Image 1 (cartoon, rainbow, N blue to C red):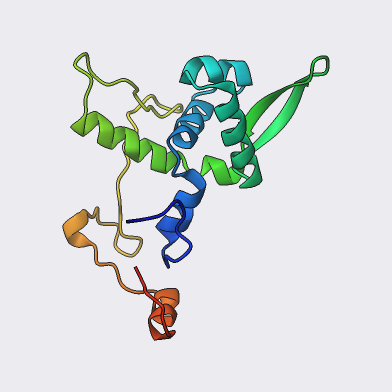
Image 2 (image 1 turned 45 degrees about the horizontal axis):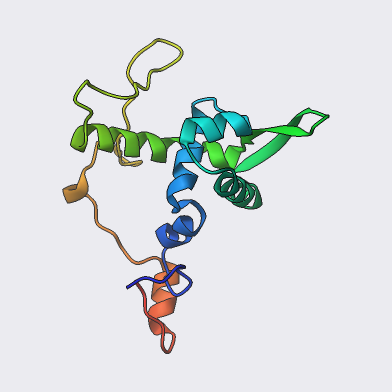
Length: 161
């Protein structure tokens, strides 16, 4: 059973989960992508407590996924903006949305439609090979050990996962 952190894991996915794996974190990122950038708007949109939102936003700032911008002096109020690092999670969230719509659809239809701002076309996520451009699925992918995994397996007591 996994503990509350993944320190013993030699896996980039485990390290990423340390940053974004908490439920509210992904929902906050989703809402920031959707344009909800003010604290009060996020509280209302998410239905989260102020204390949880404060902790999660602080965590996202510490990890350089979000930055605060002052928009009011008295009292001080901030908007939260995705950094370039945070914005790179769009494809992860889009794929999660696409998967959720496929396997857990709402009876009235899709809850969100991702469209290309330039032409209005539907945006879909897909895995493609960078060498040949073919679309790949789970049966087409092999995971090979990388250098860190190989180093861990030769270290006494190391347990690659």
